[in-house]
Amino acid sequence: MPFPDFDPVLVQIGPFAIRWYALAYVAGILLGWRYAVALVRDRRLWINRPPPVTTEQIDDLILWVTVGIIVGGRLGHVLFYTPGMIAEDPLQIFQVWKGGMSFHGGAIGVFLAMIVFAWRNGVDLWRLADVVSPVVPIGLFFGRIANFINGELWGRPTDAPWGIVFPGAGPEPRHPSQLYEAALEGVALFLLLLWATYGAKLLNRRGVVMGLFVAGYGLIRVSLENVREPDAYMPDFPLGLTMGMMLSIPMILFGLWLIWRGMREPLPPPLPAEARVPAPEAKRVADEPA
Image (cartoon, rainbow, N blue to C red):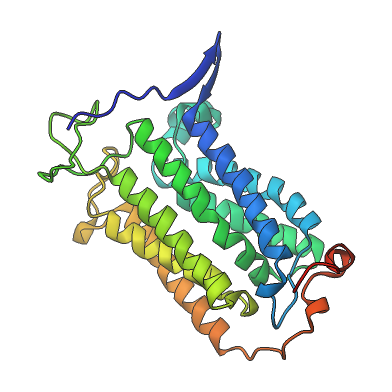
């Protein structure tokens, strides 16, 4: 089937353009911020340990996370996928409006931002990461939809009836791998972490929710690399590996270690209802039903 006639620019006024890709970042960050606040405020989730941060600290963290996404995503793209840019035209590194962001680089950037934030605020890093991890699939979903609208990061050729002929990708129908990623990295991973937080109450175990996200994303990414077209400027790696696979395999191992570590750690005894929020939050929610 032909690629839908999407315009990557939503609104343009003179030289100023609002692009779907930029809106995807904005939507992911804002919705993720509100979801993280809702997690911290929900006393039903904090049975054995109080939340690691207050809602005010979540408000502060959002700036750190945003910087980590943009700087880490851009530098990750340059270092992992286009290192020649550094020697050929280093000014292109700053031209983020031309595209080129790496999830793995953004993830590293966000993790480094959380390390500094946790150190400055005396917060448990792994428990902070447990609050941040469930919101990440929201941004992944919007980002992959924006990739599809832009007609970029398409899949390998396919004879499946839902194959799409992407502009600039040749005459062959290709897997709409962006939509596969939106469904798995976004929706499926969000539902897994929703179960982990609200069903299994795993926010009480340090690092387990983060481990589920990291390992889950790694497994999904490795599997989808088999239908995603490798970047044309990347070399042929041995054993059929791609750069995405090689960056994701350590994520799987790290995530499994976090899950193993957190599930072995003894849980503290259950807290009384009034202690299941940070002290600055206690007065505000004292009258709310448990």
